Length: 217
Image (cartoon, rainbow, N blue to C red; front, side, top):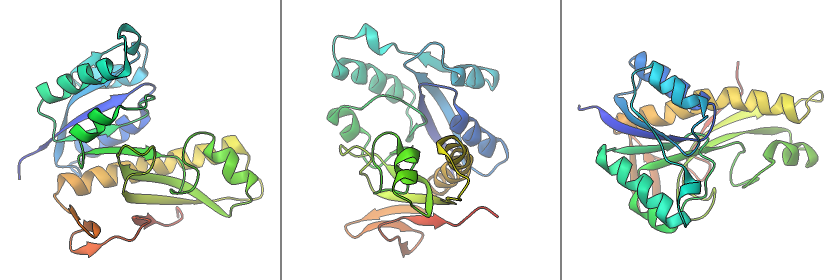
């Protein structure tokens, strides 16, 4: 089976990028990262990629007159590297419909909540304010609906009495580094398939929550 070609879009430190890089290096993921693209020149994730010998590109969104023009430049860069899969790893941009449609079915994002709960920002604060007993993160396919695409993997984190926003965020972030590489591993092994009924992992139809990873041992 040929290696899947992966493009990763970042805006910041790239810790999820690092988790995926580590999983590739260990042989878990049948893929290679062919390009890391950032809209911010100072993103530490670019340094992570450079140290690993992965090509990087900085495309400044402020240099474009519109969101669509920026997205088109990013799309051309991804297509030039013939990427099979696009990974959003802390990419802090809302993508235009044309961009999302171009990569439909082959672009993933990770969101810090158990979707469909708490789409958007401040998810940890909202979970605590609601008195939830559990929280977590979700890897999902990207559609035009913000944080609304089909769910692939959820990693669950218990909320404890002592939790505050920072402590909960730190524990969820740690679980992101488990859930995201797992989702990429499955896709690169051709284990994930779409049908009119939803997402299948191997021959099993996933429910609306995707595959749920329980509490960390």
